[in-house]
Amino acid sequence: MKAIGLCWQGVLAALVAALVAATMARAQAGEDASPKDVLAGLRAFWDKTALPDGSFRPGVDPKYKGMSDCAFSDLAAVTYACTLHRTFGWKLRYEQKTIAFLQSRQHEDGAFFNVGGTADPRSPLARLYNTTQGLVALNALGAKPRYSPLPVFDAILNMDDYKDFPGYATSFFPLAYRVYGKTFPPEADRKIRALMIQGDDGYLHNHIASTYHLVHYYRLVGAATPKADAMLARVLREQKPDGSWMLNPLARDRHGCFDAVFVLRQLGHKRADCNMAMQKAARWVLTCRNPDGGFGHYPGSTSDADAIYFHVGVLVMSGYLAPVDPLPPNPQLLSWGHLFPLPC
Image 1 (cartoon, rainbow, N blue to C red):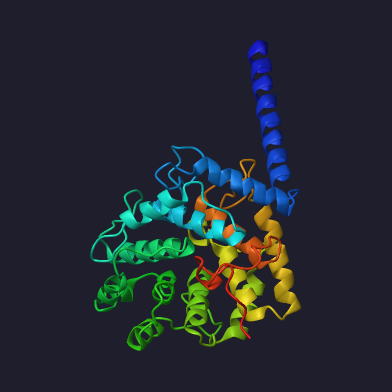
Image 2: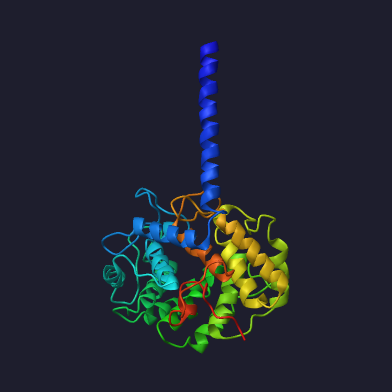
């Protein structure tokens, strides 16, 4: 019995040592990293996840299926790789193959489609998501789709399905039109605005994700955001002491930090309290960095292309990471607005 006890003590000691080592590695990878370290790690992560057909895995481990966007559609990882490479002036490992890959994922009816992921590519929401992401990725690479995507959006808005879409779907529509070089039709604008009924605090659906997309929507169409002051007050109030906005189950708040920082930057960039909150958010994001150079959705989670885009977006918006100078053409159209110009 004594020998067994000693054996378990040894196992426990080994586990504790492994935990301490992992914690130290994460600290070294995250909070102690310089901007130069972060950028070098990002390039290493994308290099490890780039595939010869031009696509990207969501993580370093080939068996990893991704979380959030990357779990929903296999177009997410490649889109985020494209937009972040353009953000920092890097060239994709297989850039021409990536363009061909993206173009091959468009049907003649204009819809882009996923092959991997949980999304049903025939569903209206997946058609909206995939087509927007495909357009954004090709635009980042200076390439065009093979077919006009506009019939996809027209068909969705001519059905009642769009009324049941989650609140985060609103800004997909004007983003896709602008990426394709077209003006968002007034009737389509009227339909989407009718869905964005804010509370007294400015929030949409009582959640930061839907609220972010509302702000993103109004910035894309060039209109003032209603109830901006009330919205900023709640965003600042809900920031946690660690700098994050992880208030609900993780599945709901994985992008909460990015969403909140976009709102703070676009609506409150002239305010000291908003800028302080963004700096605090950047410090939390750095604790999500891993030794492989990527970022997880929260500290200790697996590096994921989706998490990398949104966390790096926070680091760019907060000023911790500097984008390429001069900026790429139409920087506001690179994914979800991490380079969106500030309002006058």
